[in-house]
Length: 233
Image: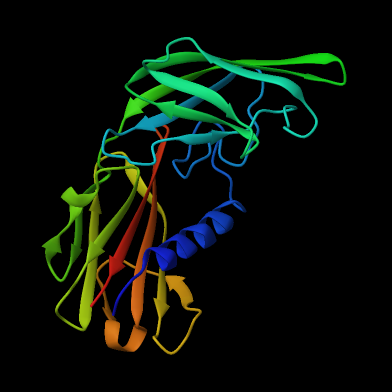
């Protein structure tokens, strides 16, 4: 079975849509590309962004209350320290793009004019270095935890066996928010989704292609992480 990038991206979009129905706490910045997670930032905001040098995407899409591309002009964004985090407005996406670069705290200022009036929004973002949330992430006893290097990691696994046992153990302070699996047989374009549990065995021949998606959170550090296991044969 061959897992394509298109299939993985389709699954991630579906999960993102599902998570949109369950917004995170305002103090938690979900690393799925949106700071404040489905919530426009308001004046005086305090957010957390996760930085990882191994992360190729490494940015957040930021939406600010009252500043919308089609209704505003002179849209601007500034960071107090571009070496810690840079911010700019994207006309194409009609949102702000925040790129964390190293641990630290920055003050962000957003401004625009709307119907002749000036809109301003100020707040702080703390950038923290990514820490692996899993001690153990194994398929049939082989631990793949070290392959989790970013806050939205995709781990490709090619087990030789048709039956696979899924096991995980989290680092202190982390807890599992959800774990779902997508199974897709070659004869079907659409797969089916269900909860995936620790220490359970799944049959790849019966299930078809299998993706396991885990959403983790650390309440103390204010972080979230997403891990996708792509089981391929």
